[in-house]
Length: 386
Image (cartoon, rainbow, N blue to C red; front, side, top):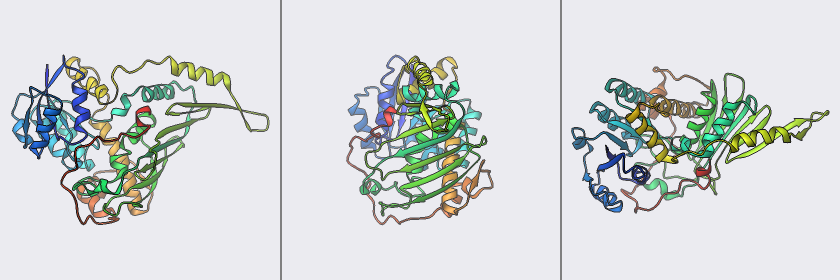
């Protein structure tokens, strides 16, 4: 029976708690920590965590008998909290984004390597049936080589969203929609396509004058095989319709699932290819459903890695790769130059200090609120289908 601690009792902590509660034979939550102790106590009461105790200082837990922690704190604290728990001999599941800089990512990975404990970065949308099936179809080669990939990470957030004290700042949140909303779609793109060799990006703040950071960005990617891609990251899109599209030489597939296969007529214009469409659709339909979805799926994978030595599907290197691509977008949009990968340790965008010195402040936060009323959060109207 694994003993679990939740670090940070904000809105996202609910997803972690509910996921752990799906495995009562494998784990028990023994602690919830938050700088506002009443929030930790409220979470314990809400979920009737009878074996859990509330803490205001997570450092009290470093020496306790705990096997694994979920880090659900604001992004600027991820590296410090994660490194401290890894060094204390605990496995760590850290929320997205992994950290605020590649330098911090490397420190987290080093701590995991030296401690021998597992470090996993939340990318729960990989553990959804449509996403797993999409990846399998791509890997099958049925659509041919991918020539164009498209990420539409469309969200909508009201002006008051950035009133929360740590949101909308480069120092505390680490960035805007590209880092904190599109991160899941960017992770999925890298999982399916690998890292691009270069990109060119633009970003803006169109609707939130209480935030330093962007609320819209667009990036154009080039991959080693010559294929192109595009990523739109937004918190200004009504309807929050999100999708990943892959155009292969033979067919087009996407999540949410849509399939189109074309052949060429004698004059070069398209005509449907029903034979290939049927083959791809049959392949997709025969793929298995995932056993557990979302956070529960990822926690099941981490537990299996702890219990049986199974492969960890999303590790620190994976989380770092996602952040590297995001920082490439920030670098290109900030410098108005094309960016090539990898970003090395001497790059200004490798460290938090360098990032903060080189990114634009679209606006300055003049006021903030300490806490919002505890309400449910939306996960995007189509994200669960992606």
